[in-house]
Length: 401
Image 1: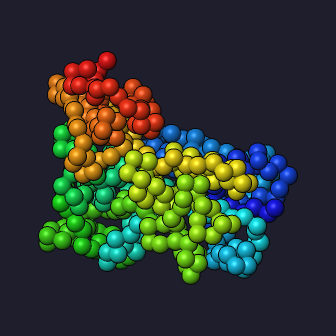
Image 2: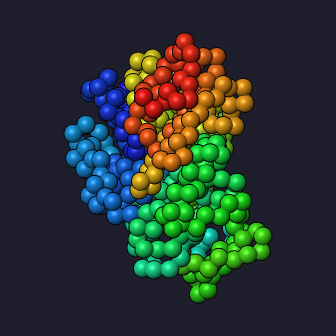
Image 3: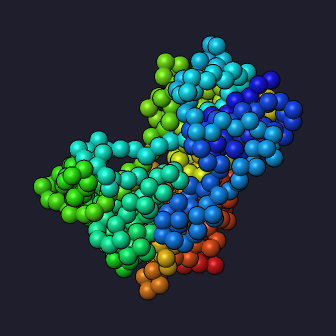
C-alpha cells in the first residue's frame, strides 16, 4: 500500500507518525510546499517579540523523516490531485502515485483585496518564511498598523511593542475577539492593550494602503481618515489551501468537509488540519477553527484510518489561549453569540482584573471564559470535552476554588 500525505505541519506529521505505527513497512511520502522541517506556528509571534530564539521554533530536525522512515518531498507545492488516476501532481512536473491519500495542506493568510496590498512593507504572519520577511523588513522605529484583533493580531501587536514600535491595532467589529468574548472580558482585554501602549481602533475598516516608490506610507480608512505608518501586518484570518482539489468535488470555500473518521467524499482520500471543515463537538454542525491542538488530534485519527483502523474524531472544540505579558485569557466552547439559550454564571473581581464566565446547556458546560486566573482551566475543558452532566452549575463566588 502506497501512502501519500500532503502537508508536513501539525496534522500531516502526526498522521505520518501514527500511520507508521500501523503500517511499519509501507512506503509513506510526505509532501510540503515549505522547504523546512516541522516548526511551531504558535511560536512565531514569540519569535517576533524576541521571547524565543530562532532555534527554539523547531520541533524536529531534518533527521525526523529518516527516523520515521518517511520519504519527504519538501519545497514542492501540489498543483493538482487526480482522484481517478490516484496521482498527485507537483509544480515541478513530478507525479506521485498513491493508493491512499491524506490532505493536510493547512491554510494561508487571508487577504482583504485592498489597493496597495502588494507594496513593500505589507506583511502577513503564518509561516516561518512570513516571520523572517517581517523581522527583516520592519523599521527600527515608527508606527506599524496591525489589521485584525484576533488571536494572531493581538499577540503580534504585543510582540511589536516589545521591539519598540508604535502599534495601531484595527478591528472591524465593536471589540477584540468578537466571537469569543462577552463585553466584560473584552473590556478587560481592551484595558490591557491600552496599558501596553497599543492604540486600539474599533469599528475600523481599512479601504486602501497608500504608498510611494513602492513602499507603504499609510492605511486609508473607509471613514475617510488616514493612519500614517511604516509597515502593515494583515491578521484577518486564514483561507484553506485546497485549490489543487478544484474539479474533484472534495472541497468548498470553507475547506474540505470530513466525517467523524476524517474521510472525504472519496473513500481513498482523507483530510485533516486547518484545511478541513469538520463537525463541532458541541453543536454537531460543521465548523472550521484553525488551532494547533485540533490539527494534531485530527491528524492522529486520520493517520490511523489511512491504515483502516476505524477511529473516530469526536469533534472540534474551539479554544483560545492568550498571554499579553501580565494579562492572561482562556476561552473555549461556544461563544456568547451561540449562548442565547444557555444558563450563564459569571464572577468579576474588578480589583484584580479577574473574570470568569461559564455557560451551561441542559446541565452540561458548553462555554467558558477565564481572565486573570487561568491555571485550572484545563479541568473545565475536560468537563466540556466529555460533556459530563453536572448536578448543578458552579455558581459565582465558588469559581475561584
